[in-house]
Length: 505
Image 1 (cartoon, helix red, strand yellow):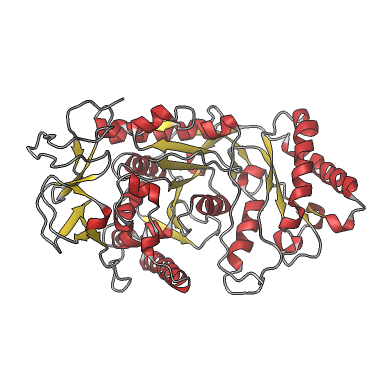
Image 2 (cartoon, one colour):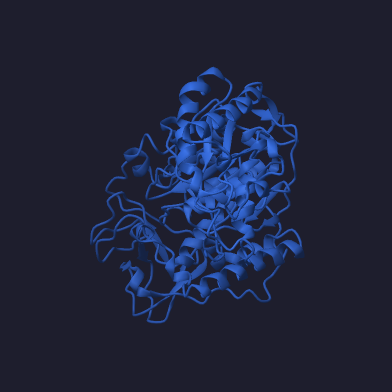
């Protein structure tokens, strides 16, 4: 829907002294809002209008939080640009409240189910995929050649198997394998190899001389194939096809059956965010998150740099002191990590985020964390750790779309909900990515890439709860194989991207 000529803005909280413009083409100078405020200059869609005059050094508030201080006097009705604000000091990690704002979530028994693939270890898959893990970049070319042959020659013979995926990466050799933090990429690769969508069938292709030996990924020699033990390229490829067919035969026996939705693990992430993210798509995802948690399922939210400036809103939701301290631990680790690289939080947001109306990381963080809903935080995962508890979990990851997606997949998500205001065709090879637009105009422009539109919340066509319910229902249909995301429909995927803070030698 194209918002008409009537000037509209969204003010999040009564104490806010700024609001964002809703109109698709922004508003012109002289536009008068129903509140009586007049725009004294042209203001683009999603950008902030000053609801009152703010003197130099004065606070700019959005979400009932300080997002910056005025560099100079800002007149009422003017466009608040990034250059007009200085960043506030980040919340101190000392003396944060822990467990003081816990909303009781009662698990409600439900008859709702989804059609999943049960695994012998008690987990459930939402796809039936042969995942072939690499131990080193050296083997990727050979494996890609083999996978193409597998898809053409073998996969059509096994109709119950959805896909064959090569888990390729740039790690494995020339790395300080015993260094501090090398455990992050190693456990990520290892945990990816046993993702629930692979049905317990592990297959690792290695070279033989690499630092990350295939035996570290799996201790079962029957699941390992080393290229240096083969005689020539054709023999390498034939050996990969032979092992793959053994796995495909076993996977083909799997059938979908009714599983409780409490078995689902959902990841939430945002990318290409804009000023609407925190008032349309992200709150709707938060509502859906609460619905899944009430049903006994698990939801992961992440992106440390987009949580750090809102940490004071999250530790009060920690279920106990241990979880609260773990949240603080991950924030502190990332503070130190950025400091080592002479970077700071101002490196985020991106140019696209700013064009979408986000002035700084504080504003971005406040809009990002609402994806987590209102449920208590029951656990904290270090990067790449497997899920171990049902409920709302913070899985520490960088904010990078590809790195966050890779780490959430390693943690065991079945599906990722990805909100975007600027647009991205991003998709993961292991799990489907349900993309939700923050603006209706993006859904209209990218009608065959965006799955759901949350921009209707801004225009008043739908409520936050209605869109959240749509997201909830869509997730269940996708998990059941009854509906495909656009990304899966087109078969597009992005490379898995490891987080490796350890040295490369």
